[in-house]
Length: 458
Image (tube, rainbow, N blue to C red):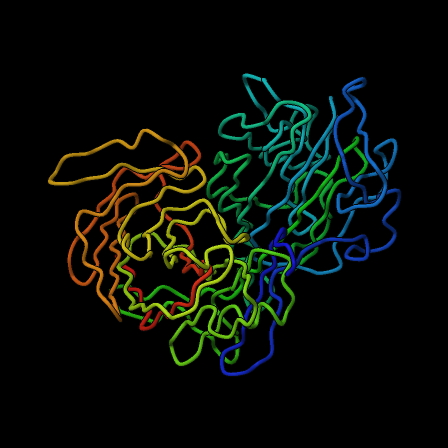
């Protein structure tokens, strides 16, 4: 059986057997427009300990390196994107500089800024400034936005961005009616921007009219840099909010496609992904068509982020379990306030769905909360992968009904009509955690979810 290392995302089209790959993984130079200049693929990439201004590497691998001197063409993706979620990891040597341009226009800065007390528009994590040559000296640059805090890691460490970006909106005549928006930018697990508008292209971004869809650009001419694990998830098909009304959480419209994605952890093929999940007739089945003894884990995750809502569904265990949990209790979960949907175990809060433990709370990958019981708040001291047990065992054989009531940074867990857990004061990355994607897990066991409905609240 293959080892499961990377993450692939597949969308299973409702009512048919075809599989659409809706996550773009930029893995080779063939994924970018020619010419790609001096860029090459490498492995064992690290900052040279003897000369921290240099990168050492071995040719051949899955890491993009911008040549020997760090002054070459930008990498521009062949595919164009609108609303997206982007995950990317990067490494820079001492004093280097690069940038990630959403839609080739709007830059999130990469810079050697570790330890700097007062960060500016030019530091790592900043939304770079715009530029107007016609303005007076000292006023040409404007609208640069420094990060909320300096979240840069020490020199030599790989760093990561998770970015939720909304493209500008245009009316039928082509007139722009809404600016581009960095909905959330997370640097190394710290939220550094939320809901920051960009009125136009930042400096050195592509000039000319803004567009609804345009390629991703990685800067290659400002110094040595390495990139890896580039994953882009389209967020185009998100349903409009209908408040105070129960609607299906997952919908696959014939015209626009599904409003959800299936994210599978591992080096999965299209055929393997097609057997991992199946959503049909308002039932989400996980692992029922899986034929191997060993399996990956995965999630069915929304394209939309939710904040105030009630969510309900029924679930029932199947018979089979898979390696590496073939001899363990059946396990799954409801993940909410997911801060990313690009990988199968995202930063999130969990309503545990597991034999004997249904209704437990888990804090995952930096998300954290406190527990409320009988009006008293209990602090969970451990900050990562921490848990709080359910108050009472309400799980029964066969079908069980889950109800999750979320009010921003608070939530109540119900199982079969009984309150079994309650959380408050949710946080992530230094800020209050009040919204995120919703995901249903499959963890090495057959499980069926049905009647999956959400009611968003005013």
